[in-house]
Image (cartoon, rainbow, N blue to C red):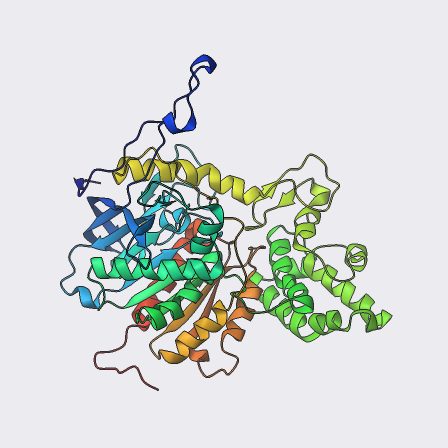
Length: 511
């Protein structure tokens, strides 16, 4: 790959923190600290072959400020923006605005493993390999859409800025400004408006994609952009969605776990032989029907469930989950996910991952009710952290002494007033162009795929917009794109979604 670096401004360079001997100790104000520039980018040029097409593109990497109502910069948000170069009519070129989740997670995951022009160097199932780094991603959606990856405050290189007196806002002030469901949506909508204006993308079809908590973020942004920025979208993509404020507690929360349990158990060959002989999707179809028709009503009855029915349910839940009837009975038919991750392969001396139950872990003791650590997350950090630090600095030319926060300090996070699912419904109702696609991995135990289906069913209870909400499932976990087969499939699904949601010439937005 040929890279022609064209710096539009000097990137932030600061001295690293000095460690002074005790006899020469300096006060905090004398110590140099790494600082990020508020408004500064580097542009590099690249070539790619994606979906069979060879073309050139630019990568704009750097910071853009968050402005308050007084027009003062309150934070610097780090972003990477990819633009295909051979586009004649930018007004017809879709723009995808990408967020990860956490809250507190950088945009690294989808950036260098899913939709971007580079993908992580891992094996075909997503496990780390050395040397660390990135490789060309022939499945990226850059052939059909430009993409900007955004890092919210305190993630990646994004940071809160001092005021004009050099004073940092207090932690309470920062939380009100940035660290909560609604504060997050408000300032990011302002930032997106500035970005779209600076890069002259107001006429382009626009899409938001969010992963995990990022689905809460983009669901809220859909209405916020519409009602406060007057920016209308063509699509919202929910990858491994949270509940987005849609209630699914009590028996629903407990029952919805069973199809995921079945998927994880099937993967590890822990189901009865007759189920193991079936394809995964055939097993899940059977378990989903049982969950809705029998398991959920049984859990709702609680202590009123007759003993013989309880025994029948316990036997069937055990059959589908790979656990013993005794364990299911002792759990009062309600098995927690953390216990499942510990229990499923306890006899083998292994645990299964939370976000992707294909990953295995080993604990100090086989007794206990939850794993010692998340085996999938340690594996991902193993490969992602060196790759993003290398890629931004050495391939995209962005150099700074500021630490890249894979997970940044954003807590306590204010989760009150989360109406993001309803906000998404309202945005769809007001905008006939707006469509939604949900993508989930069957082996995700944190935001399980059946919960995602449930969310899709309840975004629009009226069913008046059911034809504008789609679901896609994959034989992997939370980050389904780490599996080579699903990297292609999931990007192909996005590519088709984008193409299908750009209206025909002259097609009006009306009911």
